Amino acid sequence: MISALITVAAIAWCTQLVLGGWQIYRFNRAFDKLCQQGRVGVGRSSGRFKPRVVIAIVLNEQQCVVDTLFMKGLTVFAKPMKIDAIKGKYIDELQPDVIFPHDPLSKNALSLALKLKHG
Image 1: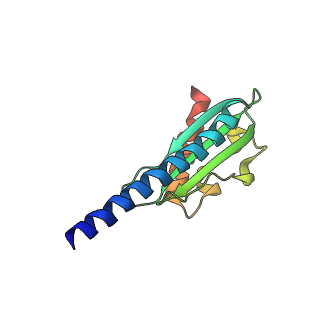
Image 2 (image 1 turned 135 degrees about the vertical axis):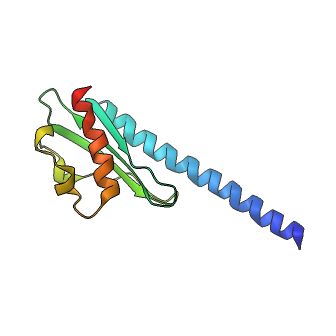
């Protein structure tokens, strides 16, 4: 009985490692594509038992959003997506509380990503 539990735990741990690596691979590929387009700002929400949010935005020389990356989730099945609502807007027009009125984690991540304006 104990060896069966240890075996199941080991299989679950190995599966989690493989799926976690796959998620990191997908994120890195999407992030590399962003970095080739211009200056990138990244923001990440914190929290241990809440869905983590990662937002990256690409700005061109005119401070206009060229592309975005958005990941949110608790599991390794979260995948990179786009935020179409802010593409083509200038950085000064972006208000995280208007874009994510009911999502404080996304609002916080976008606020941190927008700090690249000063960097």
